[in-house]
Image (cartoon, rainbow, N blue to C red; front, side, top):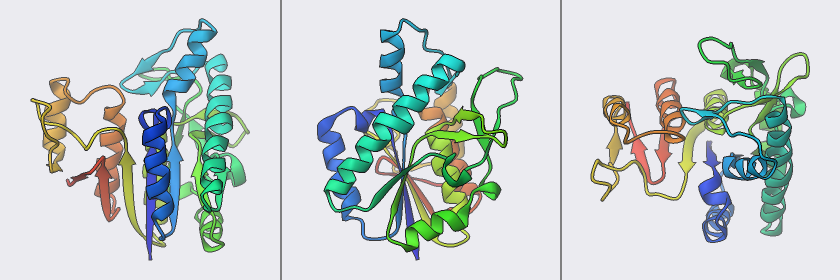
Length: 246
C-alpha cells in the first residue's frame, strides 16, 4: 500500500490561493497520507512584533527559550489547528499532532558543537512510534504534524519540518511504499538562469548549485533531507514538481 508524506511551508501556508489549491489536491488524494507543515514566516512575524532577533543558519532556526515558546504557539497552535480545521471542513479526518503527542517522534537536543542551535531537536527514524501512526492511518485519520518534538525529559524542542517529513517517510517505509513530496510555490529546483526547473537533480548537481549560492537558505535542508530519504530507501521523492534521484 502506498503512503504519501506531504510537507508544506510558509510559501503555501501564507498565501490563500496557494493554500486553497493545496488543500483541494491534498483532499483529493485517496491513498493514506500524512501532512507535515512548517510556517517559519509566521514565527518571524511574531518575533519582529516583539522586537526579537530572528537567527538562522543555513535555513535552520536558532532557538532560544523565548523563540521556542513562540515556535510552539505558532506551529503547534495556530498553524496546526487552522490546517486541521480547513481539512475537516473539506471532509478530511485530520488530526493535529506534534512529535510530543503519543511520544510519536522522540528527539534529543542537538549537540551545541560546532553551532549551538539552542532548543532544537534531532530525530531518528528508528525511534518513531510507527504503530501509533499506523493505527491512526488504519482508522482513516490523516495525521497533521507540526514541527515540534520533545526529549525523554519532556523538554519541547523545535525541529525542522523537512527533517520530520524525511524521518516519517523513512520510518513508515517498513509498512508502506512511501512517496515523499516537498511542496512549495515553485515548480522545482531551477537552473542557473532561473528559466526552467531541472527535471532530475543529482547529489553532485546539488553540491555544485549550493557552492555557487543558487541553492541556499531554506532550500538546503529540503534538498539534503530529500537526498537522504532516497539514499535510505524511500520509493520516490519530489520537490515542487521535480523528481530527485541520487
